Length: 129
Image (cartoon, rainbow, N blue to C red; front, side, top):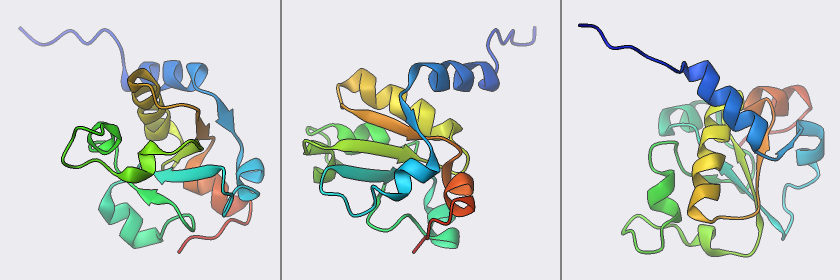
């Protein structure tokens, strides 16, 4: 008997987008280099290498995020232990919304999602390095 999928990926992403604080690319442009914000790139390593990342961003990935946040994990990244606002982004905003939900569930706060991700960032004139 085939699986009965009751929620689509779109449904789950939509719910995450609806429940995650967000900022647009124009707002985010002014936060690069801020001592109060950390950008977190949730795309996979091949995407990051191919297009570059927002200057100063922490490289994570949707699959490793929880391990990077957890201070007890051998993969913990110390950047996730700072009293700053975390700006999550991916290619278009869906994976980063899911990641933001997981991060908030773990207690990371405050977290915001960059609406439209790298696509919106580039359209707004943002650079990648």
